[in-house]
Length: 381
Image 1 (cartoon, rainbow, N blue to C red):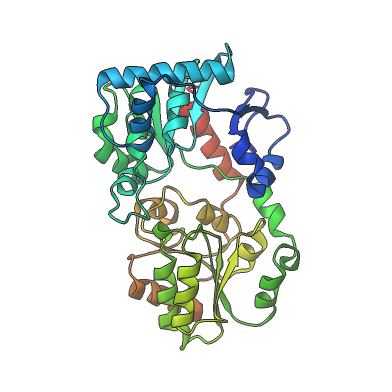
Image 2: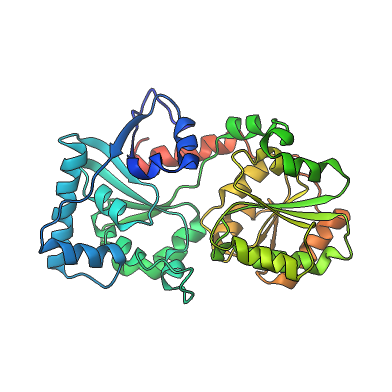
C-alpha cells in the first residue's frame, strides 16, 4: 500500500513499536525497505495506568471477558491519554489500524485524534478466537472486537472475509457502522524486480534444487497451525512415489518447525521436502517454481497467492473464503481442505495439468485496489 500511495495527495505517518523493531532484524529490513517519503513515529515506554485501571486493562488486553459500559469508558480514557503521550496534540485526517489483532493497537487507533478511523480485518477472526486448539486460538481478539464500537468503518481484505466476519461479529458493530471490502494491493514493480535476482544469491541451498530437472511445489507461510503444512506434507507423501522428480519447498519459520521436520522424517521424505527457513527475497524461487500451494484452514486474502499470480506461477489452494477470493474465476485451482483432494490436485499438476499463466496480475490490479483504498478507506472520490 505504501509503495503504491499517491504522495502528492497523502502524507503518511507510520507508528512503530521501537523496542520490538530494534531487536528483530527481519522487521528492521522491512523498515529500511519503506519509501523514504514516509514519516515515522516511534512508540517507546508503556501505558500509564492507575491502580483502578490496571485490572480493567488486563482483562481488555487478554480478551478475558465482556467489559461493562463503565469499563469500556475507562479503556477509552486510558487510550486517549496514551495518544497524548505518543502523539501529543497532533491531529490526523485518517487513522488506520491495519493489523487488527492486538487490543493495544486497535484501542490506540480507535481513540486517536483523527477525523476518520478505520480498522482492517485480514482473516476469519471468530474462527481464530474460538479455535479449540490452544496453540491456534487468539483469545485477545475478544478485546479487539470490543473496540469496533469506536471505529467509523471496518474493512475486510476480501468479500468472503467481510461476510464471514459480519455473520459472527455483528453484535460488536455499532448500529451506524458500514463494513466494506478493500482488497490487498500489490507492489508489482518490487515483486517482479526482486524475482529477477539469481536464486543462488537469495538462497544458495535452494539453488541446487532448481539446478536439476524436476517439478517443484512451493509454499510461503509462517510455520503455524492454521497454515496446515502437515496436510500439505501428507498430500505430497501420497504422490511422492509416483512422481520421483517432484520436490516440495517450504519457506518460513514458526513454532511448528521441529514438528514438521519430524513428520518429514517419519514419512521418509528427507531430501524431497525442504524446510528452507525465512527467505528475505523468496520471489526468484516463487517465479521459478512450477506450482504454488496453500493448504490453510483460514486466510484473509493471501499475499503469496497474489504474488504468485503476478509472477505467472500456477496456484492450488484449499476451498476457504480467503483463498477462494483470490483463485476464483479461473485464477487457480480450488480444492477441498483434505489430504487426498490436495494430493490429487498436486499429482495432476506434476503430470503437466497446470500450465504456467500468461495473464499475470499486474499494474491494473494494483490501480483498482488503490482506488478501493482511496474511496472506501479514505472516503475520497
